Structures are given as structure tokens and as C-alpha cells.
Image 1 (cartoon, chains in turn orange, purple):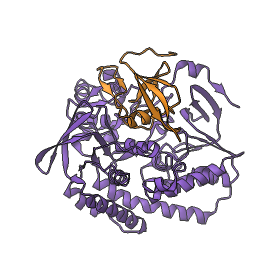
Image 2 (cartoon, rainbow over the protein chains, first blue to last red):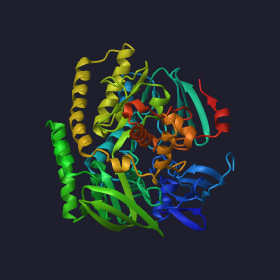
Image 3 (tube, rainbow over the protein chains, first blue to last red):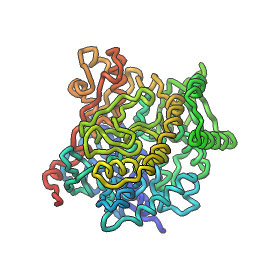
Image 4 (spheres, each protein chain N blue to C red):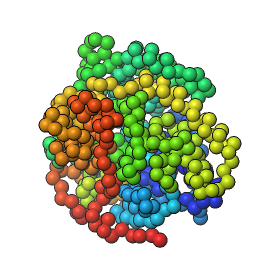
Length: 90
Length: 444
């Protein structure tokens, strides 16, 4: 099956149907997903099973989305999550 | 899956709330979707798991529904369950519930474990199963069967790991050997283990044992791992660093339901109290699989059947006593190998009670030193620690710091872990927006 793409920052990231956003990013060699809220330090996926909340991303404008639990979809706009985010609808 | 199939056979109406998009949990993740050649790289057990998943899927119908991608965020003793799909929540009533929440990998706090590119060994395996991608030049650190399993799977997929840094010592082997009471289950485990070690040795994978005092430094996506092994200091470069210090039950739901738990000294964790069939300390709540105490995937299939049969017995269904007895006997055999594995791969103090500068709460970035300071200021237990430090109050809700906190408070106060207690866990078990809670649909 041909790969499809979503956007991460300025890159196009390919995925196959059924892959999570986090799996596709890791496959593309991207490990830095967010900055932490307290220390503003880089962080990336840790557990890949929805338990650790370290893979939080901005997905289609919505903050705090779990990259490992969100199926990748064509045309998604994914961004690194900065240290300061606002809660609620993005 | 096994519990649901057993209940379905007795003509019960069953709903399986599955957080994953596909059946199979973490162990048989994606197993039914892969072709045989790919699945074979993950071993015979995984291929057999694929058959079980297909069997389960074929059984889904009028009386068995499978809610996929459903994140359950509340289960109450009064018989109400609430869950989220996409960004919409629902709730409904139930007569009885079987918790099958599985295990979490034990946190292995050490300097640098929060750096991007440092993950759990289980996380790497999920990436391999779902994206057929092997993290390159991996250094695997820790101990336990999963370390060898994933390392051999990496070999099969053509991306060998750079090294295994194993924390167990020669003394651990000796002590573990005294726990061995051979039976058929034990022998099959030992043969599997020996086979994996042989593969690693043929492939000339570098292995260090008695590893301690690990420190990870990361720059530009590359990592350097400094460690001690048998009295010498070593350094190794890595593309990825993968940690694994065994697994423990995921007790978020059993805790939030106020069920009784006991400290498991052998596996250094809290296990919910259950009888041999999986009945919890409260009526109509049952626990199956590793969530009731870690015994592995094969034992989980039997405990799923047992929990379902317990439920049926309690509802006065006709349950074949011979089947119950045979399933109990099969399940019991896994306890012997677990005693051996728990002893051999017991967590080490250098990571279960780390140095002061190490972050132990990944979410709120709380260090071990801060926990020790709080205790010296009079903090008595894990729940008070939240007020002192916010430790355990972040998104993961204590899943990855809870046991470290128990160990640190136990050490600093000089109390056994059993007397330290645990975080009080409350719903929502997973973070969701207030809007979602307010707007949730009640299904009759």
C-alpha cells in the first residue's frame, strides 16, 4: 500500500494506515515531541501505550493529544507542543 | 478476550472496552493484521496470539460487542462505567466487571532517562509490531525476559542492538536457582530463554552483566551511556536507549475502586488481592491477567477464563467443576517460574531508590532529592507528598513514579513499603476535558 503523509512542523511525514502519529514520527527519526511544562526541557515518547503522556503533541490545533494513541491521518497538521499551552478547545 | 469468550459461551451479554484500535492488547498487538512471514519474526507465541485475536473477532456479534479505541476513565462500585472515544464520552451501567488492565513496565529512573530517544523496551517492541520499525543502534538496559525477547526480535528484523547492559548479578542467578521447582511450564520457559541467549551469542551481541550506576547523556539525537560492570567503568554510544526493569500490575482501576491490595515483596509492587479465580475484595468486580499479579501472557489466558467462570459461579450459572479444576492447576504452574524470574531479575536499589539529582516523576519533574527532603520535613506518605511537591499529580497520575515514591518514603522513614501505602487514585483515570465530562452521553 502506498504511504500517505501528514505534516510535522515543516516536514512531510509518511505513514501506513493503522500507524499512530508517534510511530510514524519515530520511524522518520523524530524523537523530540514537546517541551516540558516545568523545566522547558525536550521530551519524546517513552511507553508508546498511552500510559506515560510524554508524547503529547499539538494535532490539528488541539493541544495535549497523545501521539501514541492517535491514529495518523492524511493531511493532519502536527506540531511540537511548547512548554506553555492553553487547555480546552484549540 | 478469553474472559469474554468464556462468558459468551454461557450466553451472557458482553462488552469489551478496548483502549487499543485493534484487539490483542500489548502482547498480541497487531498480530492478526500481519502476514505470517512478518508475524513469524516475533516468534511462535505471537503467531498463536494472532489466531486467538482472529477467533475473538469472529465471535463479535449480537451478544459480544467490542468497543475499540475506547479509553475508560471511570468504573464505579455502584456499577457505572464511563469511557471516551475520539473526544466524546459515554457512560452506562453494568452488572459485573472484569478488569483486564495488564501490566506497566517498571520505571527505571536514572540520569538521562527523560531524554528524547530514551524509551522503554516495550515501547520499542510496539514500534516494531505496529510500524515494522526497529530503533537503530539500540542499547538495552535492565533485566528480564522481555530484554532478550526484543533483542532477538531485532536480530530477526535485521537491525541488531548494539549491546545489552544487564543488571542481574551472579549472586542473583544462585539465589534464583533455589526457587526452581521443575514442571512442564518451567522447562518450556527455560528452554525459550536458553534459545534466545544462544541467538544473541551467535550474533555476537555485546552483553554486560552486573551493570549498575548507569548515566545517559544525549546530544543531537545520539546518546552516550556510562555504566559500571564488575567493578569497571565503561562507556558506549547508542542511537537509542531502551530501559526495562520488569513489569508490575497496572492498578489504576483497582485502586480507584477501593479494592484491597497487598505489597508483593518478590516483584516489589502492589498487587490487588484476589482469590485463585480472580475475585477481588468487592462483589461483582473480578481481575484477570497481569493486572491481578504478573504471571505473563500465557497465564493471562487461563486467568481470563477463571475470572469469567468465577463470575458465572457467583451468578449461579452451571459451571463444570472439572474445567475449573484443570484451569486452576494450569494457572498455578506459572507461579513457580514467576518466583524464579522475580528473584533473578529483582529491581536494584541504584534505580529503585535513585540518587537525589534524578527525576522520578516525569510529569511534574520532581527529583528523588525533593521526595527525601519532603519526608525529612514531615511528609508521611505518597498522598501528602502531592501537596509537598506535586509528585504524582501530572498527566500519568502516578503510573510511572508511584512505586519509586513508595521505595523512597520507605527508605527515608525506615518503614516497610507495605506500611507506606499508595496514591489514592480517583476518576478520571485518564485526563479528559471538563467539557467532555459535562457533555457525556448516558446510554441506557
